[in-house]
Image 1 (tube, helix red, strand yellow):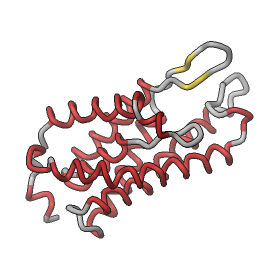
Image 2 (tube, helix red, strand yellow):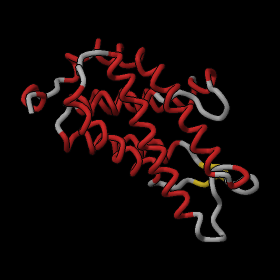
Image 3 (cartoon, helix red, strand yellow):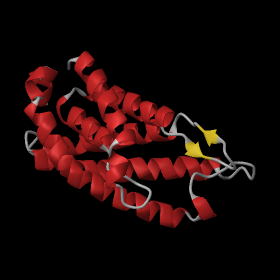
Length: 185
């Protein structure tokens, strides 16, 4: 895989997610093009490369999206998205032999279970962190179930937008220079 292309597209997707995607948000969530990028890489890259790409994308999302804390403070916690993206990437790696990889619908549809896995890991990390009575949870009111349901809507919405994003990524497939031998295993 061409690492330079991945870094450029990753920064573009994170910028797009934080700058333009809130325009089409539903509730507090906007579709994630970064998740679609990681799914695309997980479909075509070797296992270790895909896991490192998921970790890098999750860490960049953790660092670029501070969690609202009490008052005017912003809390940046590296880890929840990073671990969640690795968990979601592992799920896509398990499912990639069951789909047609060069199909944008497959890329978009795999974005939804990817983000459900990311959300489960993200919620688990924040719930464990919330066991400390002095810690601040990133959702208001302390209702984890409503947060999980809204993240499910986020995953579905990202999957729909992921079809178009997947089409663009598949169109650029030759410049990524994925190793063809890893696709046969």
